[in-house]
Image 1 (cartoon, one colour):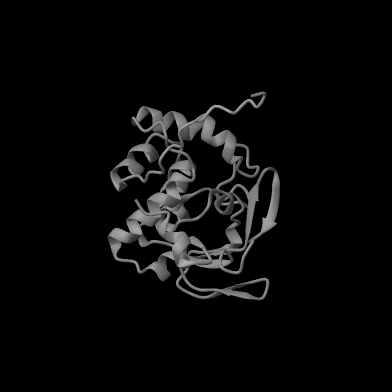
Image 2: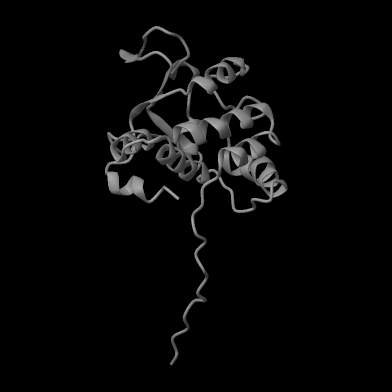
Length: 191
C-alpha cells in the first residue's frame, strides 16, 4: 500500500513519412538541413552518422577513392563513426560500419553544398551539427507547420524502411542499408 506507481503514459506509435511529406518538411528548412532530411529518408542513415559524416568519406565521383587505406566505391558514403551526446564513437557493430549508396537524386544536391567545414552537415557556424538543437530550432517547427508534430530525426529511418519496402527491397537489403545485425530488427522499422 505504500508503493507509489508511476503514471502510465501511452507510447506513441512509430510512423513513417510519405515522400511528399518528406519534401514538404524539407522545403521549410535551410538548404543544408533540407538536403540532410532527404538524404536520411533515402539512405536510412542515423542522425549521429550523418552528423559525423566528413567530406572525405563521401565519394561523389564515378571512380573509386581511397581514404586511410580503405576503398570507397563510386557514389557511396563510408559510414565509419557517429556523433551523439557531444562525443564521437566508432560504429558499434560490423553491420553499422558500411558503405551506403548515394541515390542519384541526391548527388547534385550534395555537390551543391558549401564545403566550409570538414563535416558535410556542419552547423550554421561550421561546427559539428548539434542534432538536438537543430531539431528544436528547425526540424520540429517545419514539421509542425506541415501538420506533422510527431516528426523527429529517427522518423527518417522508419521512412527509409517503409520506402524501401515499397521499392521492393528484400529484408537483407534493407538490413544492410540500415546497418542492422538481423533482418528481424529491420522489420520493426516498416510501416
